[in-house]
Length: 251
Ligand code: 13P
Image 1: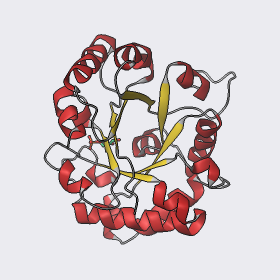
Image 2 (image 1 turned 30 degrees about the horizontal axis):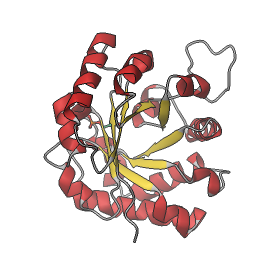
Image 3 (image 1 turned 30 degrees about the vertical axis):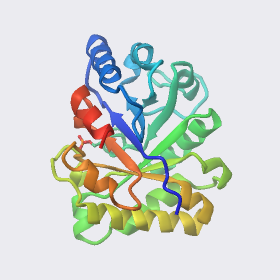
Image 4 (image 1 turned 90 degrees about the horizontal axis):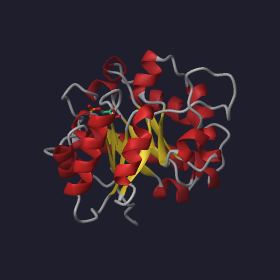
């Protein structure tokens, strides 16, 4: 099986102001002397994108956003369009993060529209899926993931999804210090790849990158990356510090 090029992505969430973001990005570029085996991306808050882009543009670190709105333009106060993100230098956009679903009432239908907007603008969407602790305990993990994948990717053709990245982020592992074991991650990633194969065929399923997210740190990245269906990580807290993130990237 062809090994997919890993992607290690940092989700900065609602942390850092402009000077702090510039400082961290600058330090990351300095620490990342050798191009790593993985592709590297950081996703700062929207207001920080431009300043961070200036720091990373000559490096191998790509820029990502944490969300977008699906309309092209219009009277949508506070919203950010795909075109704005492209013009700021973004290559990736995270879509459907559990925090967006929880605090901003984002539904699978919204996620589907956002993926459409991203793809139509040439952005690479990172579709986040994951179950809560209660859902895991009541053995609903796979049915929840099925629903998130099927509804999020409804009406897309295989060709349109050829660059899509999926991130499995069990909600119980986000920011809790409780990482899924590499076995738990592998079981879910394998399940997701099979589900994608059933809907979109083998060629898409074998090329798609499935990232793990939830308390990833320098101490657990190697074990997670040793799993055949783990193709990278979506890192929250540990991506805020340049030294820690670069240690993860160089797993
Ligand atoms: P933590 O790495 O802080 O657990 O966050 C994971 C996450 O939500 C990345 O999107």
